[in-house]
Image (cartoon, rainbow, N blue to C red; front, side, top):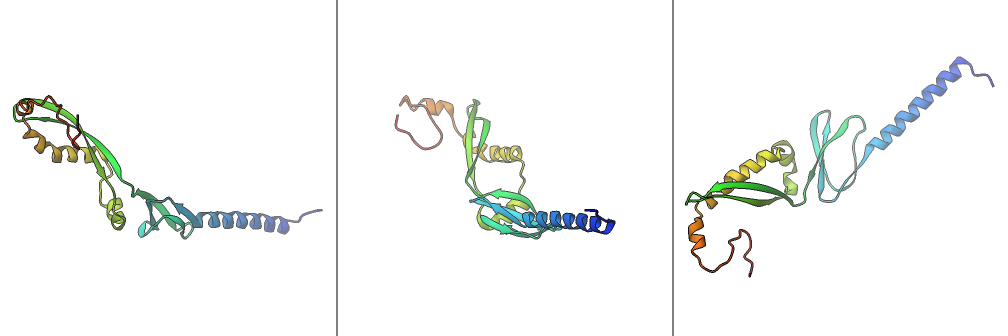
Length: 155
């Protein structure tokens, strides 16, 4: 069978259209995991937050720019502070945090995502209570127990 030029052009055009249609169909749907929210932008402007499950977007126009984890997360902060009797103490403090579902926009656009900066802020906030601690007074308790931060444990 001999193809003329118009048949070849029509076949190429149909193939390109099919590829574009399949790409548009595939990029229309996206999923969001449980306890996660996705941020959808249209041409660079915030449009909506997509919740868990199967979601849709306008292909080639809308874009998923990020996902926010709504689970409880933990940040371990190493703090070095000086007690009131001039003893340097190093300890690790665990800070647990989570994003409220109604504050996803603020968490994505307004909060600093730099964890070392967050650790520094936590260190500054947590240092004053430990500065009032006196190692000499804790040693004079005389009960022979090691002082621990966190929940009380029977030893």
